[in-house]
Image 1 (cartoon, helix red, strand yellow):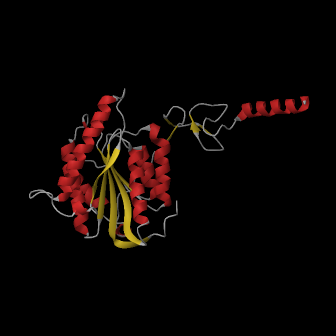
Image 2: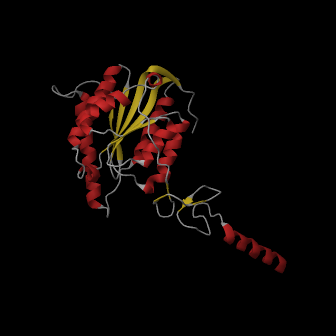
Image 3: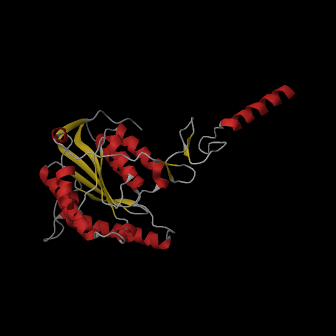
Length: 294
């Protein structure tokens, strides 16, 4: 694949890609209703479009089994209202969201997980970066891209590798990842994503005023952020997940060849097949004996 062209931005035009957590397992146990959450998010997205005629908004629904584009303001069918009472932003997004939720729920019913699953954050980030890369290749002048993750589900350690790959890809493309986390505890993955890419991580203290937090913290374009004092994360959880059991660990073993992380000592790396420590010495001794015998 050809490399992306040099990134020439316009200061006052934004491309905002929003990943929306629709995990039914999370919302069924969360105190804040999804309908209230969605109404405030829709008002925020509408305000982004009102801030600039050329601003673009893309919304990706993030379920526990799949992800899907549910709104793209640059699409022709979203330029006009689909009925006489509801703007196109609301009608088209809600229609696509209902279809996505039904498919995701059907898949969950057919393959009921043994535990409460996390949202497919890795897939949503990958889709967001793919859309932004298409914008990069559309021409030398394009909007300032950024990703906003609106999530509340717990982290899925099994997604660690895929999420970190997406984070480093965003960093390489100079795409900041903003995170608005509404769950009970902080998200280590989103904290690392915002820290590494130069984005903003924020956990609203009161969800009843979510629109106010979104509009004051995340509505500002990248150029204006240089002149504002925005919230800074007080700490970042840099813990990783092991490659063997997909569990979050504080200390572990790292392969010196491929940098795979393990919670237990292994004689051989399961990723690159490198031999470790005493096992490596034993293999070398065995090879030496074979050469002498021959």
